[in-house]
Image (cartoon, rainbow, N blue to C red; front, side, top):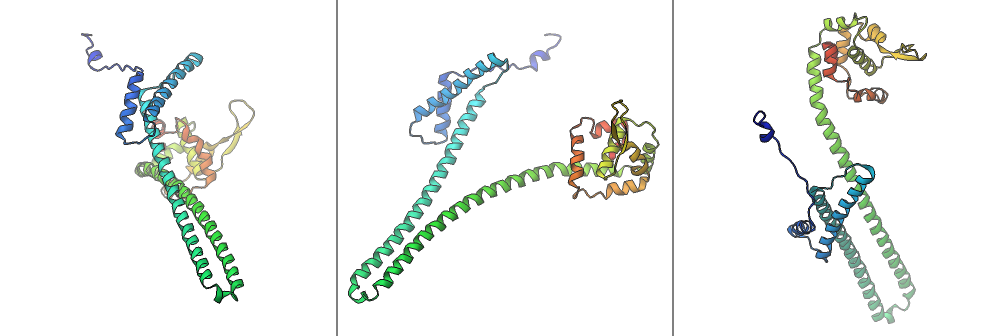
Length: 309
């Protein structure tokens, strides 16, 4: 320890101990009361949290004995359980209150309609001597009113369904929008970095690549991907591994087409329409994105020019 004092100064041991039942109960009570959550059976709910967490701990031990794989149940898991419960409870209460208010509005409208109908009936009773001749017309009017009442209820139900569907669609659209914005925020700095790197590329660098008889794998990979993005077709050649099958060879295509005119290649790279890449090319280039050797730093070891490409 005297020779290596950092072993003492820079090391920390984390001890993860299971919380006792009293601690689980106390933490749950503190969280629930701190959030001002009203529960009809507070004690029963706190016991439920305690039982759930301890049951999971016992199950994780059994899982470890059966599979020799650890599933860690930490105090954080317990706090997430409490947080998820309170969030779900709040969401459900909000949902129930919303539906309750809608039902109340619907009942009010029905009561108003019933009151209007009762008033008409009272008026008919009072004026019955003068309306004997028009009784038939009044009966037909009542039928129309009842039908309108049923139609109003049907419209109210349809509007509620459309409102719910619109709310769900709005949430889905917002998720897609946020996801697209995150991807764009990540892509723009990388695009700017690529453009700056490309500006350093010279025709002489491309000519040096073209004359390589047996280029390194990094050069082949960069030219192969560039050929795919420009829609160039590979040359079919026999597999040097001796499988008897023909494989796609992009190096010959790169020498004869891609690298044939360095100035044109530079112009094509700068003017590449990055906003309208065909789906077919995206499908072809997608497998390369997961390769460890398909990285500017790795390509740079083979060729500075290919790093820019």
